[in-house]
Amino acid sequence: MYATITETRLNGQPVITIHTRDGAQATISLLGGQVLHWQPANGKPWLYLSEQARFDASAAIRGGIPVCFPQFAQTGKLPKHGLVRTAQWQLIEQRNEDTLAMVTLGLSSNDATRALWPFDFALELTVGVGADRLDVELAVTNTGYGAFAFTAALHTYLRVAEVELALLSGLKGKHYRDALDNDAIKRDPQEALAVDGPVDRIYHDANRTLVLDDGNRHLMIVQEQFPDVVVWNPWEHAAAALPDMPDSDFRRMLCVEAAAVRQRIELAADDTWWGRQSLIDTRVSV
Ligand code: TA6
Image 1 (cartoon, protein in one colour):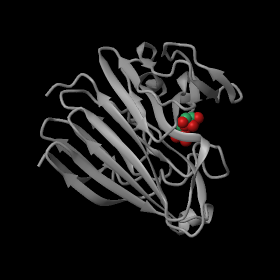
Image 2 (cartoon, helix red, strand yellow):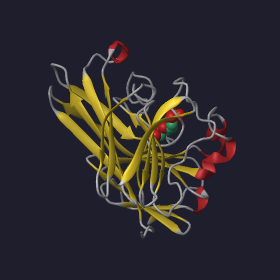
Image 3 (cartoon, rainbow, N blue to C red):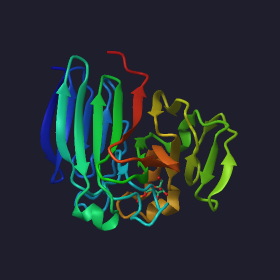
Image 4 (cartoon, rainbow, N blue to C red):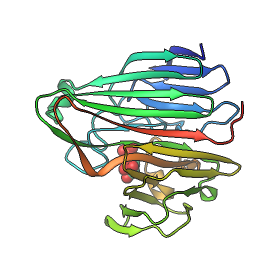
């Protein structure tokens, strides 16, 4: 057995904790189907989780990796970021092998989702934890009789020591939609993105490996099947307006999200789409 996998509670909500033999850790909440904590072996946490996050399903838990489905942000008529961030997911499988621990959570359409979005679906969120990596895969199956289209994201809140000193590379030359400038389409000329003000961008076809430099540690961010990358930091004023995040915590976080937004994904009946984001700590040696 590579890991200890435990079902327990955090702030009153059911969570799964994973502790690997080599010291990596993860916590996954059934509320929202959301990874809340990940720390590689010999490393520090890479995910930001607000100490004011709500765990009562009145809002998405602020931090970790919320799942946005079937709508990203306010790109349609559904509630912001869709229907599943405050839903209760089920644990459907766990695997505990030589060097890998993995859990799969599931959520299916129900009366509450059908009241807002009249389609049948089954989601699976598979979270794999290794010594130096976290793999999060979202699979969407159309369990209804007709096709549907959706947008989606893994809304990853990365934890940084000081956001103004962090550098995100891998987006040079990519076009992005700037939500803070009337959705203008721009091209990023910079070798690395340094965040020193509010940022809310959807980078298109961003298929290169990203690297986040956070002082003396580095994180590789690799995504498959998700064509877009969202980079978000609310900065001072918008952060102060968030009721579930300490005012100065915009300095401790940077969202780097694996997303499918620019083009909706069309899914025929019985078909499955999947997308994955992998976070790989480059510093670990065990
Ligand atoms: O992914 C970026 C974004 O769409 C931002 O515009 C910002 O609003 C953020 O998500 C957080 O949304 P939330 O509903 O969790 O407050």
